[in-house]
Length: 426
Image (cartoon, rainbow, N blue to C red; front, top):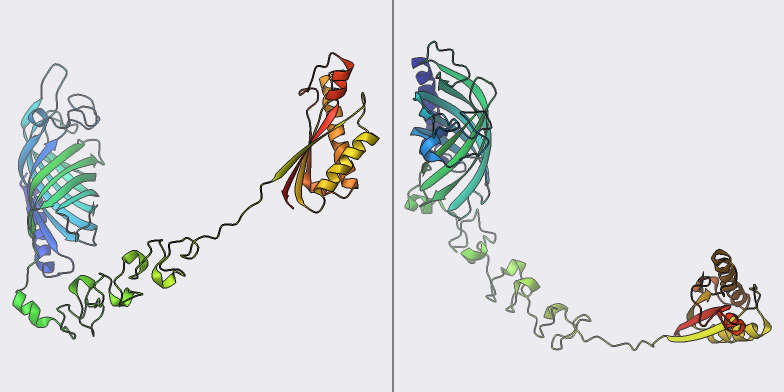
């Protein structure tokens, strides 16, 4: 037992000693957290007296064993990441529950833990936001005194501590009350590498103290190099030889539009950031410096669009007829198709042809015949000089009669090819 206390004491001394060595490193400030902690062995996905994961997670009365202390030293590695070393002590008094029993108490089992974590801060460590939520991952080593429900308990040497390594995951947040003092709340799940050490949660809440020392303001001012005398140190002044504004990192803004002259395309004219410091007099979205018509709104390089009149397509319909069970072009049909050729020649055109048939014969045969009729018309037009690629064909078989198929005259009208000639431009 004493040996285990010595382990924790040495660990905490190392933590504090390490802090003293690096506390003057301004670029990587150190933070000390002093907290109360609560151990909960219940909602870890085990059989009774433990329970399922997250079962009664906030049942402080029956499952949380609250104690002091937990001490953590954190070092900022980057704007979003810190590395943390912590040591904690607890007396476990609660060990879950059995069905029908509100809670299971144990005899104040000593708990010690040493853990290392990397925390990721969503809002960044150097940002102005007071609230700093984070998630963490790491590992550690935990010791628990043997007791009635410990899986490693054998009833002998009950005051002995047994330990094992753990894989840790955490979620929490810091809230900074001032530049140096804040509050912390955190929940950490510790998954043991050994079956004999119970998996458990450790919740902690306490005070966060920034250990970075603030130099005397007068001494700091004496060290500042400021060639242009604008109050912005040369090391952060983007325009160290021109007096400027602190808000613009030491650069001047002649037109007062909030855009530093070095980034302002129109430094003498008050403008807007979206136009790189230039203005847009007519409000058409084109800055005056690239607007061909700065005083007239338009979308054509800042000028009004020139409307082009587009001629409407001219659509002409033609129908040619076929004899029974034929797809040859009759002399009468040739005359109609020659008229189509004269309409389409020397224009921008396209032609679609649909072949049709009556209901005499099978549907399959009539469909084939309708395709042949459409193709016959297409081939005739091609032979007269029209373009193959501008003519499309399809067969409809007997599916689209224009009149009844019950009479010979009706069937004659259904044996046809319909042409749609579209003249896009003359």
